Image (cartoon, rainbow, N blue to C red; front, top):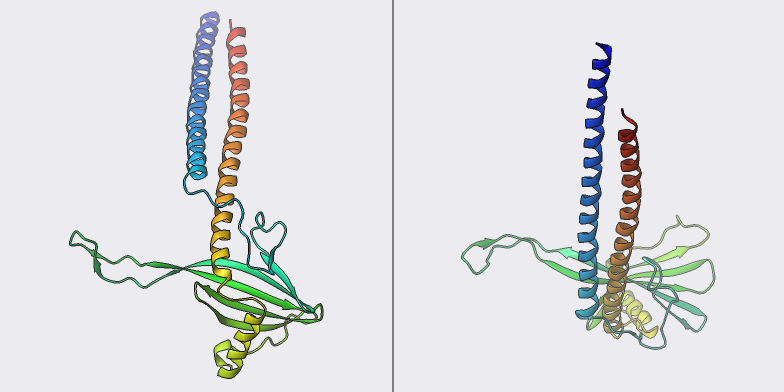
Length: 245
């Protein structure tokens, strides 16, 4: 009686082991298929980005500004620098997308379009320092035909919490005009716009290509790890099945 019971149990275990082997094989097949499709999609996207509207190989800022070393690979930090007398001028740039209020308009098929629009705004952070305790920081809007100052702060290296100044638009009109002239004398003007536009396109292209490369590498590494893990599980299941009576 007990022999029959043992035989039935052994048979059930063997069936379960065979099912696990089959499931492991399906896992391997599925993992390979999915990762293969991801890799292929990444490669196609990489080729598309590389071939369609490639950025210029080199963009030069208006003299006497020079590109800060490593600016292309950094997500933050100064882009341009120059020396003006005993001053060091540094420029950082940020692209800001602004949502416009939704408006009612027809989209061509008679339906009303209530979706908001978007505009892209280029912001310049202009730092002026003389190696002393204080420095000036301007936040400016960069446009094809002008540079507009949004704010100006007097920063203290020794006391960061000190009073930084009034809101720019609350300053006297004559002082605002002189501060604009102050920046123009240091080469902060609309000549920067074409370079900044080209630079941002180059940087975005560089970041996207690197992202595709890292994604493909991650999928490849993950795929290899999964295959090794599943092969080990399959070998263990097959070993268990082989030792069953």
